[in-house]
Image (tube, rainbow, N blue to C red; front, side, top):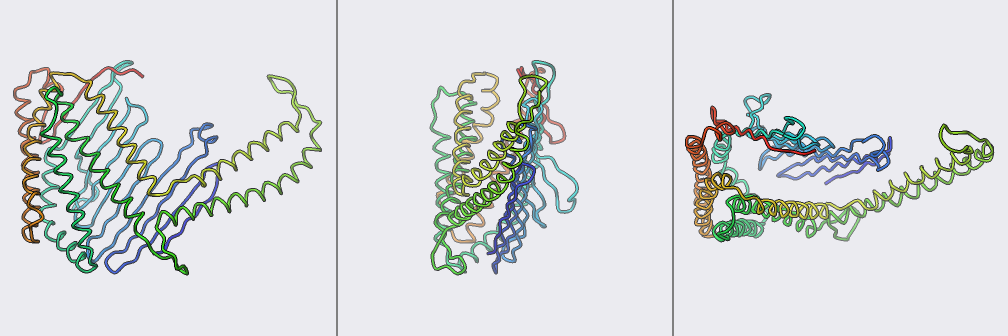
Length: 441
């Protein structure tokens, strides 16, 4: 593994570019990570933009070639994953004002890499001073296409992972992963069947879907953090074992120390010339349009303090840069806090109309989770061939759930009032929801 980090300071912004190349007989990985962080003074002065990008290119004779892209800025976030054989899947989020936001999930077929296929589109727009409009468009057939494609690739995926695990004797980790999946499904099942009968259908839906999603993400974050902290390796010309977070922390500490020393030398050398210049103009007075007269020395003293503050902010930013594992932990904590606050809001909403809508989702979900739990309870006793059949069966269940959801929506719309049909409609396999609601800026 080879890696490098380049840091520079330009236009009152810190630029850091990291590159890592991992070479292995079964997989090569090329990672490029870049951060542009404007200092506080610059952001306050002209709303300067900070950028964050991550590009990962994977080539693998054992698994599959893949490309991952992530970019974030002040106006939006985009992420995508693509493979030559399966196509492209991406997500975009844009907007800083709630009444002017948009988000979409979309894909591209390998046969038509230039054409976007919309899976889910959400847009908000202002209707007038105190109202906004939320538009949701959902491709009801897209999940079935993705699941069918996944089903055809399950045997090759399981075979590749099995051969890799046997080759490097990591079957114990595979068993741990399998147990984690089984435990998550069991927890989802218990949450789906055990709830307070006084809860609204919206609260039940939120606990079944959003809360369980957050817990699943947390499991993966915990697993990645554990690997980062427990996987040890030797650096060239060193006999000590270390971890990736420790290496990155030492690297940023070294950069901060070197930067502090360099800036101090520059500052001291400039100060000698600066003081001589101040002596020449310290008695010169200038009168400002508003206020008392000030001397040239006072102006230059303020310039001197400003530069010293900028240098201090730069060093402080590098010194307190979080390690990868700590950032992941904070992401998990933030996601949990957001979900908890959202859950409080969902619990406070009481609506017979929403109850009538979400019961059509909650009942099929309970049936699905119950069937899924019955399947995974027997996973530990399965061989490879039986595992292939079981995974394919689970995918078929997902397809059945999608069909059931589509049929439920169509049935609901046929029975809905004319007022409801004005806001929700299905056309050519596309579910469209148009909801106006009050909004205050």
